[in-house]
Amino acid sequence: MKKSRLVGFVIFILIGFVVGLIYGWVINPSGVKNTTLASLRADFKADYVVMVSEIYSSNHDLETAKKYLVVFKPGRTPIQAVQDALLVGQQFGFSEREMRALADLEIDMTSAAKAETP
Amino acid sequence: MKPKQGQWHLLTGTIMGILLGVVFSLWILPVQYIDTEPNTLRTSDRERYREVVANAFLVEADTNRALARIALLQDANSSSALISQAQVLLASNGNAQTARGLALLGAAVNQPSLRITPLPSAIGMGSTPTLQTPTGSQEAITVMPTLTPAATRTPFATFTPRPTALPSPTLGAAFVLAKQEDICDPLPKVPLIEIEVKDASGKPIAGVKIQLSQVNGGSETFYTGLYPEVNEGYANYVMTSGMEYALRVGEAGQLVSGLKIPVCKTGSSSSAPGSIYLLFQQP
Image (cartoon, rainbow over all chains, first blue to last red; front, side):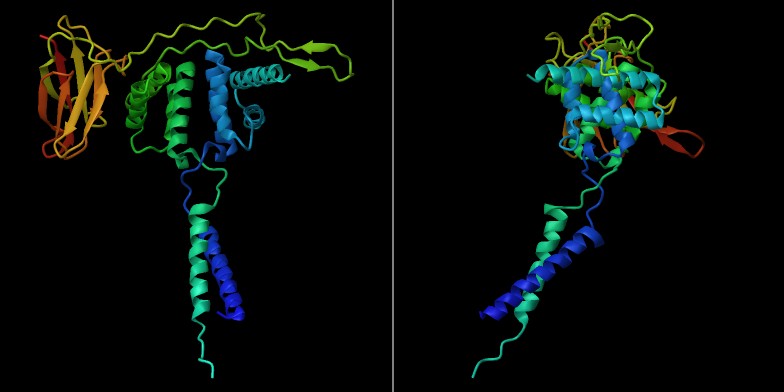
């Protein structure tokens, strides 16, 4: 194959590739399915974190709480996820009980993180 | 003289590129969605979500709220999904308390008036956040989040262990069918096979294995004891229209076959699906 023909071949592969990307990403993207907890809307995430904090208020098992909150990684650490939920809670007017549960969890997680850091 | 070469290689290259692009954009690096709703979660995250809702339900004891949260998943049959997850958890020696929460929540889906006693929580009792003063002083202000002094956390209530999927709890006489009846009044929301298992003295027994098979193939195993609010020996199974079932309670119990959704007359010419009640007892 001549060099010029090879170059044309590669260029048209690239053009086709771009067309394929446009089809898959813009024209006919895969449906909203198989998403993760990390992709939930902020208020759903905050409600999830509230549930975790309520569970923590009963069992005081920090490891379990972290296990539930690690789903927001790599975007947000468990502590950041709780802090985000506190902010959303202020915006959406979460109850005092929920805010306290979140605050307790955030404080205990922060304390534990400080204790782990040499 | 050179042979004339066509432009087919360009068309071939374009088609190859399009195929590569489609594969890449749909499978290798598909569109990433943000701000999604719980009903779009993948299976593992749906299970995690149910688990957290169920555990929170045990603490809050707010049935309506828990049901609203579970409804966000838009499961075809929330009750079945919750109970099967509880059974899988029990079978894999998972957390018994979580399994209990899942089972109770599954029961609450069918019986929204269900109320449970919440586990005690110590919200605001255990932590005393410390804020640095803005003046740069090393003194700190201690903020007490509650009016009640809280030096120590309230001890937690001990959890009553849930029945686990143990081998059949009796090596004595096999379970036999003591009673079978169709339930039409009140009409059930979903057609169920409702099973109660009792020992010879009439005491309900939890953890009894029930093997259910469908005439056209397929079988399932489940256990009594996931509905303690009904009784420890209770279990149920949602029947599918047009299917016929056979079941056996315990390892060597009596086989009961020909179970299918009973037809309940609701008027002169109308009918609705009913449930079946089966009582098994040791002789």
